[in-house]
Image (cartoon, rainbow, N blue to C red):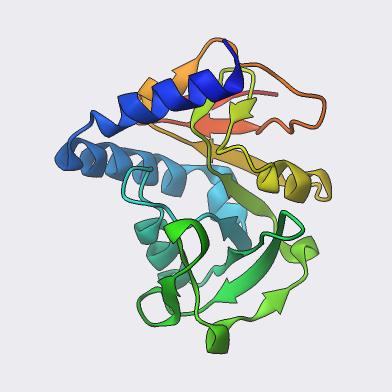
Length: 188
């Protein structure tokens, strides 16, 4: 199955979950992440800001800030298909709806930092394979971003988003760990 078809099918499958199901499964994923040694040792996390259909990262960001971790979120540069890292200090005050209808830092709260200080990236995806490859939303933003970093990459998704294999392109960057609401998969 090609990426486009797989993406479309999985988005429909994910939409079939109720809000309560998503919340409960997101909480399980969050607890697993917070218990992970690699998370505990991290200092600067880069994470996507979830939409309502994805695993909730809003509480991951709030919790990380509350326990003293530094957190970066993406600033999307559509012309270059590039992601910049902006440090966030207050989740509830600093964001507004942005590109692709995703929360993004308000102009006055953009604090661009070097991606080199990031030591853990939470990677979004529509479908993940157990060997760490993923089908994203089709822009290639994360693969470009991750190709420049030597950092721990954790994919977070609902268990129903897992497949044995996904189509892999030559520029695709796999994640190291996948956390679902049912298991942790060490891919490498």
